[in-house]
Every structure is written in C-alpha cells, then in structure tokens.
Length: 46
Image 1 (cartoon, rainbow, N blue to C red):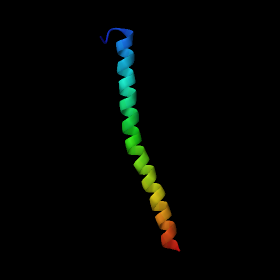
Image 2: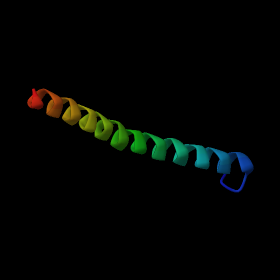
Image 3: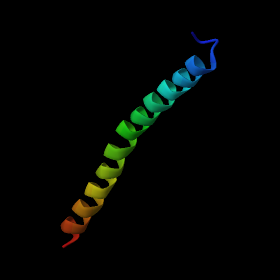
Image 4: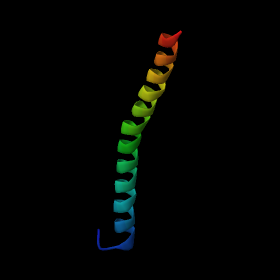
C-alpha cells in the first residue's frame, strides 16, 4: 500500500492534516488568550 504513489500521497496528506489541526488547536487559543489579556489590561487601566 505504502509503496504505491497514492498510498504515499495519502500518508503525507494525513500527516499534514494531523499536524495542521494540532497547530491550530495550540495556536488559536494562544492568540485568543493574548487578545483577551490585552483587552483585560486595557479595561484595568481605566
């Protein structure tokens, strides 16, 4: 299965999607946390 080009293509596709989803799951809450902390600091200043 993995010796054929289609199998290798699907393997790379699966790895790409897996890493992309993991990257998004880490990246989006981190950006959201930075954004919320920035707005929270703004409200605390006033």
